[in-house]
Length: 260
Image 1 (cartoon, rainbow, N blue to C red):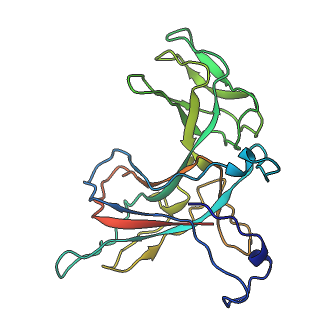
Image 2: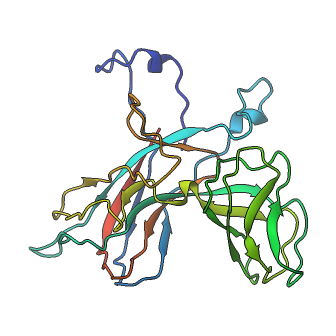
């Protein structure tokens, strides 16, 4: 669900007669995740397309414009019987990441056709700033072999080429295949074992996920709205759980995104 509001936003008072609060976030109940070092991804929602562009005179979005903001998320682990919650752990890597198609291939790539140091992107180009070291996949349909690529330099929106670490394609990729990765190359809200705290979760109480400073596209500079990640149509916020060198078991829980 997406709702566009114009009039009330300029008022911003605390009372319903002054303005209103609208949150288009979603909740996801999830089963326990066994201790593992394998990345676990659970999609929570899909950010809607800009339907106004389909109507004559509509306020359509320009290329790479945002349609909303991810303001954060909350997570809760329900109690089982008379006990519950999660003890503090320094190995926690848990939060909300946003997956995005950064663009599409402008030409076919041949399987084992020689090492590549750049990938060509179809116009209008890359839709998001990509830092050096950004990883992404050439997404394929069932039966295909996906492959991870890593940028060797920062890439600006509109670029028609992405410099990547030298690699020989392991499959044939057709023109138009999307290039999909995590926005900012990291979770947006949550914890990383590499320095963002050692969280403990009380039973039956929701906890607000902190902004993750490792995400280069998270707006955190003295903004009156707080930290946020701009969302584009088609983005997929996900519960993102990966364990580092040690493991951390995630029990059954509920996560809710805060999107406006």
